[in-house]
Length: 118
Length: 110
Image 1 (cartoon, each protein chain N blue to C red):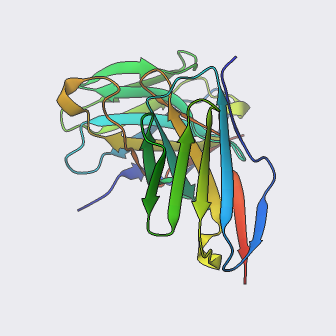
Image 2: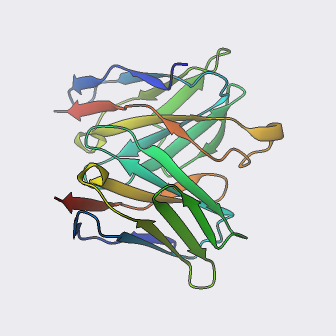
């Protein structure tokens, strides 16, 4: 049973560029959340996708956008990259019970994508 | 303002001892709280979940307590081993999303 997978593992971009990160959830999961983790900090919630729609969003600017596909996989897009966007980007999948927001609890994280913006 | 605080300094303990990590929070009323382990360069791994109506939860050498009055959770690892060395993150349910603390680094010396 494959766990959560993310690609690429590492990425180097320059300021102003755009980046797309990809995530495949654990088999049987329907909800994908994205987090940004700066060095020495805990993961910060970016947004969550369920049924191909953004269900919840953290305190991140509109430069951060996402998408969920019918097979539950997801993409995170970041436009106009800033140096401060350098971080580990984590995808987590979970199962939303009974279609209730917040009812999904345990999240399974992927290995992350390390983004460096120069 | 809302805050989650974990021991900011690394915890160094001797193999075989019990490690106790603290998670304090303010201005949240979480329905549940979780603990994760994270190794360098890897994603967090779920360890335990405790709900607001539970005082204590155990899993093998791990024990979590949850005091909603004190707004605090304690995470214990008994008979600690060098392989337990990692960063431990607490995360609470904050408005239908998980909110993480900054984590505590645990180092177990043999």
